[in-house]
Image 1 (spheres, rainbow, N blue to C red):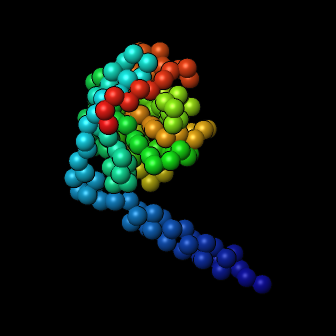
Image 2: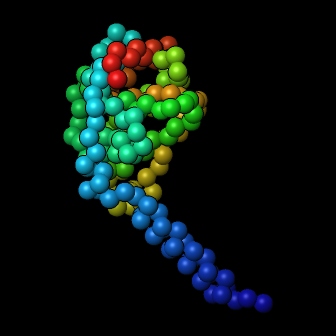
Image 3: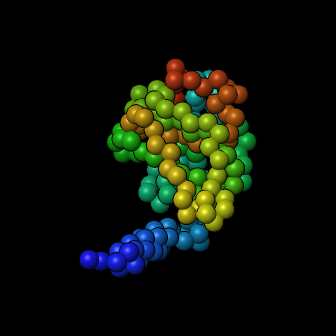
Length: 163
């Protein structure tokens, strides 16, 4: 019969290996900081936004990491090839965000408000993904407070002007 120590040692080793693999899989800060974004314009209802466009995997991984807080007329749009359940996280963020998921027709399918950044080392290791409850083709990240300030609801609609 195995002793308690004989059982715990493999479990602890597995946890350490998984933790190290997770940390190593996070792209380096220098790689993430060097990603450049094209820009465009969208409207949510009648609110125009100048957006950075995250339309490739490296751009989507980088997102708004390392950037200073944006004014309310700026944001980032994540553009995907097909509608699906796309999650976001707040790793290496400097400010809280509102996040809005839109379907292929531009209708809001999910809203998350005042999502706080993962700042401490522990938070970074356990930074949670924000998962929507519906499939989307676009996600827009804006400075926290945008959704309330402009009364963005499930009835709001995205209009792509140029991306």
